[in-house]
Structures are given as structure tokens and as C-alpha cells.
Length: 434
Image (cartoon, rainbow, N blue to C red; front, side, top):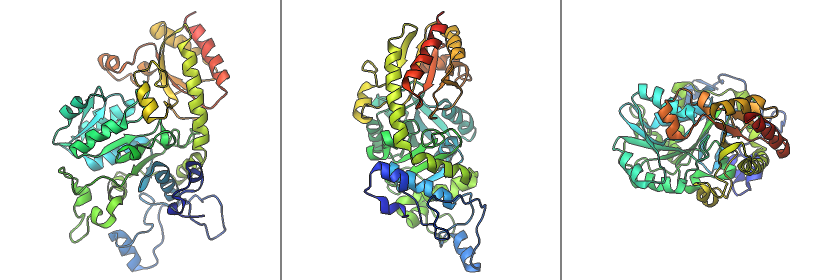
């Protein structure tokens, strides 16, 4: 087994299996062990001091470093093309730790409006209480709207590659140009697309986050989140202050930028923000994340193929009013799907059942193969009614602006036989309009 750097230049499928591993010398275990330990022994007084002061790297406490985590972190960094990664307890923890590391009280973030409802709630409720304001761009393709909303206090831009449930793809290249023009980092949530479909760091993004609970793990058995540092942002050259990275954390100490260079953000978040928040991941869940990543490309191929087949079938069903899937030629996001995503629009999208809420309820209750549950990115197909679940706390006006209508159903298409999914949808849709 080899370190992460030894796998540079290998193909995606090879790296998702091997990258990040280190030899297990004691017994020769081929699969990386699970290190279920809260803390680690120091050889002597000097080593303890060196670890705490940062003079020497190494294991200190599993809230910030764990050997099991390091395998998952190196593997994901390799797949996304980053300089390093941090795994945490959930996707929400990843977004919280990263953005609170960049922006503090009195400062702002600019985000697209059509993002995961839980992230919107995080921004509008918790971030607001902490004094961090979020401004929302309604039309991501409108450069003037970005320029108007970005203020001197703005410290980051946040977008998702494939927002759910509307599948309204974001052109990362265009938003990266905005970020560069204003000298602020672009943070991209790549949960739904995964690095198998698109790698935002290669398109100008500076940091990537994941709810790795979803497609990266894939089996729905473990929560986790991840932050991937692209190592590309010029923290010292920006005209906006990022003191946690550029200023010394203690008298006489080097700043994270001076000490870690292109990995400065990762180190600052790991030993500062994430460590302080205590958003630690269980080593068991980290191990399950590793196992999931090993088959990512294989699963994604089936997810993507099934989603396209199901979406096209839905457009022909008389009980369906519309389908929000960027892979369809008549989608307003089809160009982005072709140019940036290789024609692959992910496997989480929405469609509208005729009959409003009543039709949606009859459809939902009639499902047999497709699971009625919240979550996405599982090998199992799942359906949800956003207006009464994920977006129920949003005002009626905001739901309307986001296109969350009473008849809207979100689908996360799994890896089952496509014909079985279509048969289940067909009988449920017939029940919806009966």
C-alpha cells in the first residue's frame, strides 16, 4: 500500500480504490483498519509539547486527526484534485466549519438561492444569530446581480453544482470568474454531482464541500461530511482580511499560511475551527465512507443512466405536468449540462404531478419500490414531497419563488432495475389521477 502522492497520474477508478492508503505493518491488513481511539500516546515530554505547539505533526486527539480519517481524506482529495481534505460529522458540519472559518460577525456570504433547504435554514437561522449575513442570487447567470450583491464585507461565494430538488445546474466557470474579479474564494457543494461527474476545482473553484453521507458513501448507513481545499486561493494577496489564515495564532508563532503554504486553509480549519466546533466524525463512519468511495464510479454510472431513462419516461406520462431535469433538451439548463457536466445532470431531480397536493399525496402513498423518505444519494430510489417536508418552514412566497409547488415530487434515483422503477412510478401516477 502507498501514500496518496504515489497514486498521482492514475485513473479515477484506480484512485477511488487505492489513493490515501498507508501500509499496516503490524499484521499486513489489506483493508485500512478502524482506529477506535480518542487519543494517542506521546513518546516523551518533548513530543507532547511539540504536538500541542504545532512544531511537530502527528496524532494528538481524534477530534482533529485520526488515522482512519486520513485515508478517507487523502482519497477524496485525490478524486477532487485538492491539496488536502477534512472529514467531519455531517455535510452541515462541513459547510458550517468552512464558512465560519472565512466569515465572522458583521461579514457576509453570497449564495445562490436554490440550494439544499437545510443549508438555507442554516444560513437564515444559525448564521444570522452569529451575525453572518447571507445574500441570495436568484439568477446565477446574471453577472450584474452578482456584482450588485457582493459587498466589501463579503468573504465567500457559495453555490451547489446540482441543486436539489430543481436540478437547476450552476455554471461553475462563470461564477468562478465573478469570484476572481472580486478577490473572494468560491466554495462549491459537489454533493449531488460528485467528482466523478464534475470537479469544480478544475473549473476555478477554491474549495469543495460534500455531504458525503450521500453519493460518496452511497449505502445510507453512515453520516459524514467533507471539506476539500484546492490550495489555489491567494489569501495574502486578497484585499479582504482572512486573519485566521494570515495572522499568527499566538505570539511568536508562524501563521497557518507561513507554515502550511497551499494547505493553509485545511490546516486552519482542522486545528482551529473544526477542532473548536467539535464536529468530529466517528472512525466507523469514516471507514464506511472509504468503502463507499471504492465503488463510486460504478454506482454513479447506474444512477445517471437510470435517472435519464426515468426522466425521459416521465415527460411522456399524462399524469405529469413537467419534469425538472437538465438532461432534457428543453431544459433551460441543458446547455450547462452539455458543456460542464458532459451531458450528465445527476440523479436527483423533480417532477410535478397533476392534481396539486392531492395528486402528490395519492402518488406518494401508492409507491411500492421507491422509498418514501428524506435523504438522497442512496443506492435505493427515494421520493419526497418538498412543500410539506424539506421546505415546509419556508414562506408560501419563498416556496413559489423557488418553484416548490404543491404537486412537486423530488426523486433520488437509485441503482435498481430501471424497468422496476418505471413500473412503480406508473402505478403510483395512475393512482394520483384516479
